[in-house]
Amino acid sequence: MNEEKRSVAGFKTYVIVWLCLLLLTVLTVAVSGMKMGASGSLTSVVIATIKASLILLFFMHLKYERFLITAMLLLTVMTIAVIIGLTFFDVWYRY
Image (cartoon, rainbow, N blue to C red; front, side, top):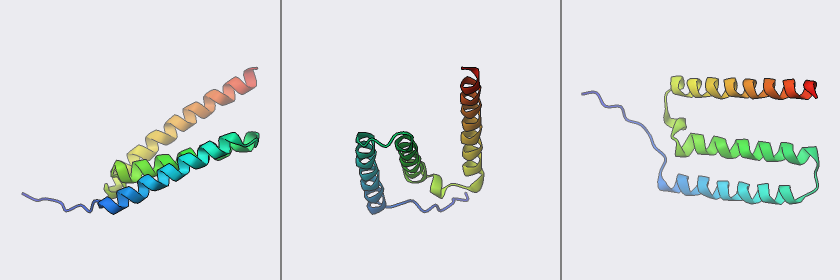
């Protein structure tokens, strides 16, 4: 049988990613306590996007998958983002 060799992150990589996630969580809590207005929400969304990317890439091993798997996931996420965006656009102009 043909077996593919895949490189998987080691324990050290997982610990570093986990520490980054903890740091970003602390940063999110700190930003939520500041009175930043609309830019505070944008900052929180950017931090959440970075955290989600780290989880997808390392803990869900997307970094080590083929391009087709990654492309299908990105296509799905973009479709959901467009649907949510159109919903917000509709609600914004309705009221």
